[in-house]
Structure formats: structure tokens, C-alpha cells
Length: 201
Image (cartoon, rainbow, N blue to C red; front, side, top):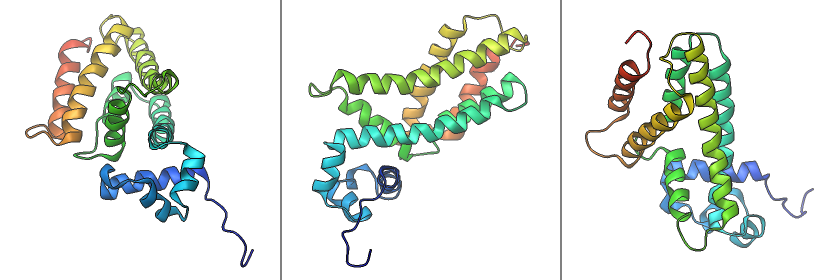
């Protein structure tokens, strides 16, 4: 209504704006005041909805993970071999490059969760995100084993080791560690899968 009070943007719009700011300006530029200017809200208004910057960051991560989860679901249910879908899973997991906004946010949330002020509920929410990636990988590995594409390994243990490998390499890519770019990481992972998982290796 003309001359009326401006309504607050939907929560998803705020979280999308936060992710865009991280991608374009870096996490250090994401302050409540700067985000408020971006979406037309005061920093106090943002704090009313999110209570703290930690909660804003965690909700932004959950929002981003929701989008990735939907994409992961599409990839894992499409036609093709288990190996092809495993390659798609890995491709989605590994950061696009240095300062990938999703991984930048993940690293910050992980770091903040180590503080004494972090509560158990926040840690449980992070664990739920990790759990979704793990369950999908376990199911995919179990399918590949049942089809004879993968060796008869324990899918849960194999998924834990593979995700640890992916996490380690992904952190290297996200922080821009010299000599570890996305293409090199994907090559390392392919080699690991070929020697440790494929049935015809």
C-alpha cells in the first residue's frame, strides 16, 4: 500500500541475499547491518527474526543445503549406473573453487560450533545435514554392491572413509591451498574409487 509500512522480505529472500553476499564479497563483509541494507531491513529487525549472527549463518547453511539436497536427490534417482551417479555425487560435493560460498559458510559454521556458547541443538542441526549426505551415499554404495559394480565392502564404513577424503580435499579447495585445485581433487577421488571400490579394479 502506498505510504504504508514496508513489509519484511520472506525469510528465504534474506537467506538467499546472505549467500549472494558471501559469494560476491566474502564472509567477512556479511554483517547484519550490510545484509539489512541489502534486503531493506534494519539490523535490529534481522536480529528479531534470527536472534544472532550464528543463527543466521546456520539457517543460511540449512537453506543452501536444502537446495543441494534437492539437486542431490535428482542426481541419485536418475537412470544410469551406480558409478555414474557416484561420480555425480562427488562432483556435487567438491567445491567449485577457492571461496566457494557454500563451503565458506560450512567452514564458518563448523568453526563457530566449537565455541563454548554453541548449543547442542545447533550441533544437532549440523549433524542432520551431515547425516543426509551420509545416508544418500550409503544407499548408493549398497546399490552398487548389489549390482556387482562395487566390491562387497561395508557401505557405511566405506561411506565414512570416502566422505572424510572428500571433506579433506574440499577444505583444501575452498581455502585455496596451493597445488590442490578442483580438477586435481576429482582426479585423486577417481583414482581412489578405481583402486578401492570398483569391482573390476
